[in-house]
Amino acid sequence: MEILVCIKQVPGSNKVEVDPVTGVLKRDGADSKMNPYDLYALEVGMELKEQYGGRVTVLTMGPPQAKAVLYEAFSMGADEGALVTDRKFGGADVLATSYTLSQGIRRLGKFDLILCGLQTTDGDTAQVGPEVSEMLGIPCVCNVNAIGAVKAGGITVTMEMSEDIEELDVSFPCLLTVQKDIMQPRLPSYKLKQATKDRKITVYTFQDMEDQDEHHYGLNGSATQVQRIFPPTSDKEQRTIEGTSAETAQQVLDLLKQKKFIA
Image (cartoon, rainbow, N blue to C red; front, side, top):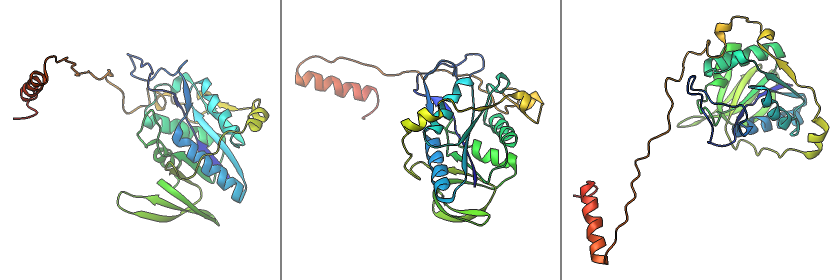
């Protein structure tokens, strides 16, 4: 079984800079890590590989330093990795990101199963996985919280809905977005890390894409753009009250009435 896991490098903390002109995150030089949700997708891929055989390929889109998450995936057992990177892809919203990933997947090869984390911690839209499947023209199941048996030509999965749980048989090729805690992600192996530290990573740029229309990528291909971004205003007010117990209690009571917390 040929399995592809889409992973992403995200900021390692909430202290990130934003480009005031484009409104996108400045990722260069920022502390980063693998998107936590993608760890669960990677573990699903590794478990299926160990149970049914096959290969696990990892794909990420981002700046050159995003190779770090591919090498992290290698240390967890992934077999191959590819990076989709180009300045023309910068500033992409979910639509342009999904299209670029779909183009990269077509360039990379054919897969029976594509796995994605439910969402990313820097976007939280949970839209990229379903949009990639739509652009590839393959079935998609989201919110998968359990994996069943792999049968001839398909796989059985359990999908968590808002009010119930459904079990589905999905034909290959297909794309699944998996919930956190579907499986316990394994820790990276130091031996695998050393053994794969020089493994070659395939790099795809704009010139490698089948579609050479620049208006389909990056900011040009984005249906949505950030108009303004700003830190939340703080309305916290700190006041020191002094006096006897009776005086401070009265001042607190008066303040609560003034703020209309009590009548």
